[in-house]
Amino acid sequence: MKYHIALSRPFDLEQFHKNAQAGTSPRHTMWELSQILQATVHQPELERVKPIDRLTAKLISQPQHWALSRLLSQQLDSDNTVFCTGEDIGIPLAILNRFNRNRCKLAMQVMEPSRIRVKNTIQNLGLAQSIDLFLTNTQAKAETLCRKLHVPDRQVFVLREQTDVQFFYPGAAVEKSRPIIACTGFEQRDYKTLAAATQNLDLDVKICAVSPNASKKTRVAFPDVMPSNMTPHPQEWQQFRQLYRNADIVVVSLLYNTYSAGLTSLMEAMACRRPVVITRTPGLASRLIDAGIVIGVAPEDAAGMQQAILRLLNNPEQAETLAQAGYDFLLKNHTSEQYMQDLVDQLQQLAATSEVSTAPAAFSPNQAIAPP
Image (cartoon, rainbow, N blue to C red; front, side, top):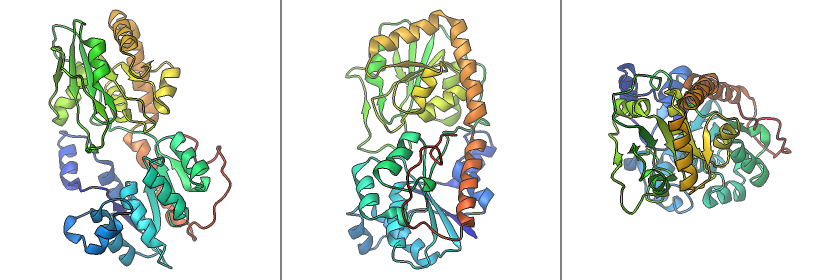
């Protein structure tokens, strides 16, 4: 059996690996996966695009994704297992696979099953019959796939969130004259509420508003006027890690969403053993709030966010207890190694199956959608 990884967008994985070995960046999970499975990595390239790819892209995704899917569907048979890192590459390959009698086995990571185009395409074209394994990161998304899109539960698996604890780990903070609040990320971020909560406080707010997946459609809210105590922070990886270490509190301020935005920042903060205040949204964030591992506030609640920040600043013992609880939880449940083992196990099980998916089965909430 041969394994393949189809990336949603180009990455220089070799350079990522070199940087990780030098300690200047986290490891890239797709590099690690390719090494474990001896998988061939495929990336979308504009120069492969043909007129037919531009035409089919009107249905969903981008022409370069259709071009790559077209090549893979022509070259790979049932002796090959393909892991697609997103719907944008996975759905085109699934559609083209329907025309292949001896098609490759296909696993697809799904981040937005409720998005209209994704939902309609999977449901209307019956893609559960040509996608053998749906991987997602929350139970809510898994339930959407099973209950609303009629994907058999045996074809759905919830992957744990993860971060690289070989790069993100506790370290010394720099000397500072007043407390530092750190906030990172771009997708679904609510820096407007964060600004309102902190603009009159005697502290510094450092933000690193960046996301590799951001687009023109990405939702983000910034204040009309940036408060004097809120400043941008450099994006270089080691400086980014030091921002977490310097922070008295990490605040993950979010617009309301069901996308599970902000979990990467949450994992990185906990890996650096910092206390976290996060906006309550469905999924893991709410479970951690209810478990007392992080402090939660309602969406757009500037007063509640300010109270949470002041409570931790005025009670360093509580802040330290939260930081340790988050760190212990992260190490037990959400390291890159644990994520990778889950993913490898699922792909190897798929590769070992003698048949590809066919008819739908009844939904059972106690099977594959149970979170790790």
